[in-house]
Every structure is written in structure tokens, then in C-alpha cells.
Length: 168
Image: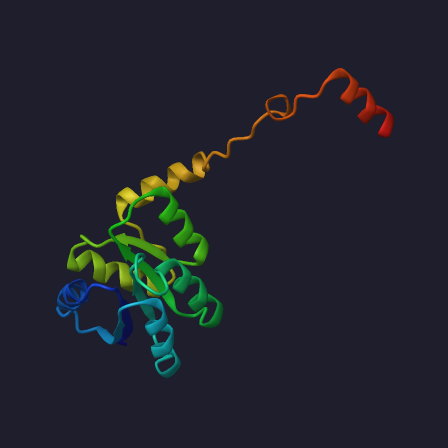
């Protein structure tokens, strides 16, 4: 059974590179490509029978994280693998929160990309090893939110404290 995919990236050279990587595998059909999130959403209206989308993050008009979120709301059956150069914690976290089913770096070799597509289509969640390690570290110690103590924020005089106590 053929897997229909879409490739969304603002760089046409990288779209061509992904197409070449996947051309070795007869089970993969590229249904369409798009250069930004808005174009992707427009093309999905006429091509709803897509199994999987390879989604870049940084694109004009509508970025990959926002597009992923919108697609998952409207077409929850479509699997999305973020395929990007960004390996920072914030992008990883935001992509996963938006509903991405996988997160790969663009330097992924053809066989690994093919395997990732098949595994994701079958319900798996694929990640480049370095991304998986960062994700595990994020889960072990979530992004730290600096909480300032009350003493750092509010300095009341003794009279102000008395007035507040009387009001309470």
C-alpha cells in the first residue's frame, strides 16, 4: 500500500532534496509540496487523502508549528513529522505540543527517513537520536520558570502591613 505524503518547506532546493531521498522507495508517493503553511492548508482542501506530512518549522506567512496545530485540529488522522534544522528545546517542545508525531533533522539519510515515515504511519513516534535525548532531558527537568519570592517583589512598610491586616 502506497503512503501519500506532502512536503512543506520554504526552500525549493530542500524540497527537491527530500523528493530525491524518497525516490528510491516505491511505497512512497509525493502528493504535493508547498512553500508555507497557508499554501499547505489550501492544498489539503483538495488532497485530504494524505497519510503523512513532512513539515519544516521556519516558513513565511504561517510557520510549521502553527500549521501543524491547525492540521491536527482539522485532519487529526494525518501524521506529521517535523523535518527541520532546528534542534533547540523550545522548537522541539512547541512542535510536540502542536501535535507533531515525530521530529527529525534535515540531515537524516534516505533509509532512515523512509523508515521514519513507515514507523510513524504505523503509529510510532520517531525522532533523530539527538532530539530524543533532548526530549528526555526536557521531561526529566522541564523548562524552568523563575518564580520570585514574595520578599523580592513587595516591600511594605510596617504601617502598610498594619493597614492590610486591618482590611483583611
